[in-house]
Image (tube, rainbow, N blue to C red; front, side, top):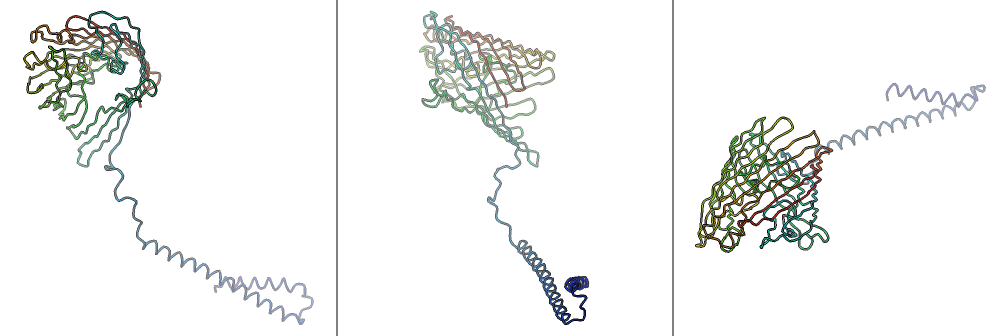
Length: 456
C-alpha cells in the first residue's frame, strides 16, 4: 500500500470517528469508547478491502487487453473475397459519352412516297427518291416522320504502360438497327435495335477493328440537321480494317465487298461474298490554323464469281477557315469502282455485260459547304452536293437496265442551329434533292426537318 493510500485511509477513519464520537464527547472515557474504537477498526478494514479490489480489477483489465493484442497480432489476416482485381486492367482510364437526338421531318416527293421502313424515311438517302416507271408524277401528299433512331453512345478504355506503349479500346453504337419482330413498328412501341457503329483497338500506331474507312475524311463533313446532308457527294463507309499511321500518313487493308449491276436485266446485286483481296487505302493529311487538307487513294479488286476487274479512286477534301466565324468544307471524289464508297452506294462498283464479263464503273461526286457563326450560340450552314455515274451503254446497248440505272443525284440544304445552353442544339433545315435516271427521268424530294440534340 502506498503512503498516499495509508494517509487517505487514516483521514477517512478519523473523519468517521469524529462523526460518530461527536455526540458523546461530553462523556469521554466512558464504557463506549472501546466499542467505538472497534467500529473504527472495522470500517478501516472494509475500506482497505475496497481499495485492494479496485486495484486487482485494474490489473485484470490490463492483463486481458495485453492477451487480446497478442491474439490479434498472431492471427493471420482473413482471406479476401477475390484473389484478383475486378478490373482486368486496373490502370485503365474509362470514358463514355454520346448524345440523344430527336428528329421530326415533313417530306414531299414528286413520284410517290418513300416506302415505310426505308432508310430514306429517317434521313436523306438519294437512292430512295422514287422515280416512276412511265415518267408520270402521281399526286401524293406530304408525309411526316418522327424518330430518335440516331441517338448514340460510346465507351472507351485507355491505358499507357510503364514502357510508354499506348492502348485504347473503343466501342460505339446507335439505335439505327431496325425494329425487333413485330414491336418495331409505329403502331405501338417504335422499337429500334442497337447497331454497332465502331469497335476497335489501337496500340501506338496500329488500329484493328471496325471504324471509318481510311478513304473517308470525316473532319470535312459539314454540320447538318440531317444525319449526313451532303449524302451523294461524300465518301461514307465504316468497316473492319487494320491500319498503320505514321504522322500525317496512314495506310489500311479494309474489308472487300463488290456491288454489281447487270444492265441487261436491270438487276443490282449488293450481296458480294466472292471477294478475295482486301481493299487498300492510303491517306495524307496536312493541318494548320488555316484548317486541313487531305488526299486519299483507293485500290480494289472487284470480283463477281470468277470474273475480276480493278478499281482505283482518289478523294481530295478539306476545311478552310475564313476568319473566326466562317469556314468552307469540301470534297471531290473520282474513280473506277468507287460506287460502294460514294453516296451510300448510290451507284454500283461494277457492271456485268451481255457476255458475263465484269467491268469497273466510273463515278464522281463532291460537295461544298459554307458555315457561318452569327455568335456563340447561333450558326448556319449552306450545302450543295452532287454525284454522277457513267453507265456505259456500249457494253450492252440500250437494254432495259441501262434506263433504270441512276445517272446523277444532287441536293441543296440550308439550316439554322441554335445552342441556348452548352451541348444542347436546336436546329431546323430545309432540303431539296433530285435523282435522275439514265433515260432522263427524274424524281424530286423536298423536306423540312427539325432536331433537338443533347450531347453528354
